[in-house]
Amino acid sequence: MKQREVVFAPEASDDLIGLYDWIAVEASPAVAIGYLERVETFCLRLSVGAERGHLRDDIRPGLRIIGFERRLTIAFVVSGDIVTILRVFSAGRNWETAL
Image (tube, rainbow, N blue to C red; front, top):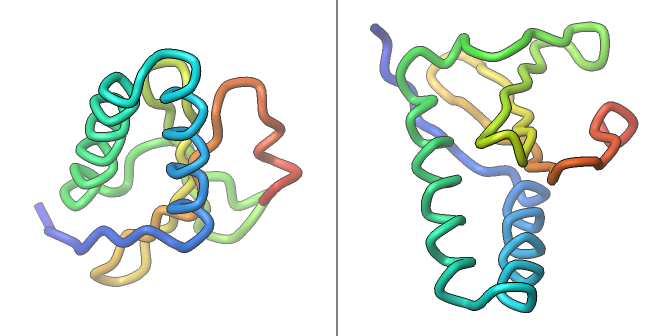
């Protein structure tokens, strides 16, 4: 299988920071860090077999959507040797409109 580099768009990084802030207040900073580490590990695993998830060309050419632990929707694109994580949406957010 082809190995690709995984990068996070600035918007995805902002999404993760916002998620950390919310979890740190609602639970604790330790819980927030643990959760974000799992999210990042999941995203980095898209380096192999990146053609996972649902292809949503109807929203944006090449857009793929994949769920994480039934709580997040991760939007990404695969281009050549790079997987770009575009956004990370928490449950209940209208990600189709945002993209």
